[in-house]
Image 1 (cartoon, one colour):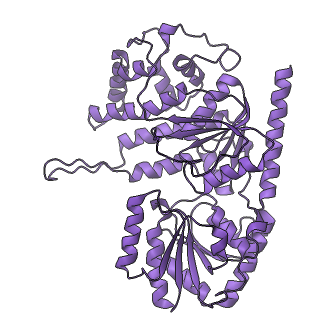
Image 2 (tube, rainbow, N blue to C red; image 1 turned 180 degrees about the vertical axis):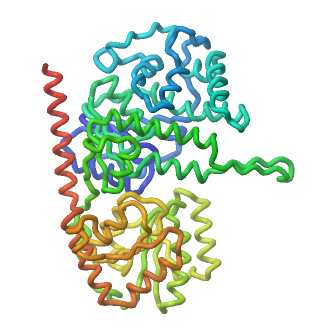
Image 3 (cartoon, one colour; image 1 turned 90 degrees about the horizontal axis):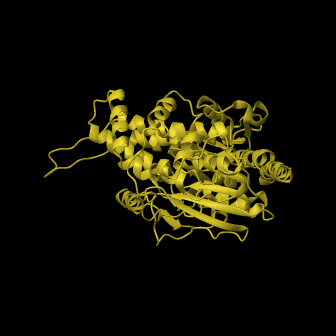
Length: 512
């Protein structure tokens, strides 16, 4: 058994970025605790490599590929009529009633309930276990899906509904059947499938859950689903169908909403990074009384006072983008803004600082855009690099993301003495303008812009670069704000208190 099990969906240790960096640093900061890591992936990939070397106090690691074929057959395709009423469970979920989740978990995965989380629920006989094969392939399951389809009154075809049901339920079954990494505390860093694993683990072991929700999972998935499209080409492309947000997409959204509400209900501690996130969590079913605000923090000593003066020793103005070259960061807007800035100010240099190997197609599109705008000699791609080295150089940090939570790169730039221009997403506004009246009184350390607005982004950067007095005031203000509100030692102190409190309770429970 490990002290803490961190549960990550599609992030650490394979993907760099804010959530992964936060996770890695948390493990290193608590070297006296043992950790296990559960990584939830799409499919097995033997050639995929870790982007982070696991610290020595990570003593267990499990990967769960949720889109692999189900392999939990008990040799029978029949789902007995007197077994758990799967149809009724679906009806209850629609009404927001999750009270019988423990029953469905025990029917799907009866192993491990001996000591906790369902002693009051009779363990099913082996032939009554609801396997993935029964849910996905049995005649009884087909009848359930047919009834659900008829009840929904969808205008879309049954075959689309059928495969949507299959596609949405397969990951749930994989999580419910996954091996439980035994831990004293389960700490998912999102709701979704990570939250589902944590709830299942809690029901089987009795160990508590700390949920740290960086972004609001339901909102992020809703954006993804709304923007998704499926294209059908036949022959020479004479038939093209573009699916709009409708009943099928609503099916996906309801699955994600269920996962979030289930996690909120069973989390013993719920952490939000900033006040607007907390409001959204409450609107989605979280108990406001159980939510703590613990903002991100950084080691200020590593980045403090890196930037000496505007223009640096060579007096050349430099603008930097720090982040992965992926669509959600909207690097396209940064490149277009860079072109506008160059046309307004002579001799400005631009840097795209971050890895470009996560989405090769998008990275290629960005490089093609740079060439088409005749900016190849003005924009430098650094690849994965030490951000501290570049905060010494750049005069303004630009973030053009279409979604963020509480970007660590903003905190790094501010304490280094670099003003920031960022889109109005996540906690960016309160980081640059202040949250509380006391915080806002410190002043502004950057400019907030609309998303996908290169002209607005360019104008904000030009405004700062043309005004050395404003630049200096913003640089000083940013350092004040980070020192007062965003030091990592404050974050660590709060998590240390949570961890020790829960571990002490666990020890008392075991001894009793």
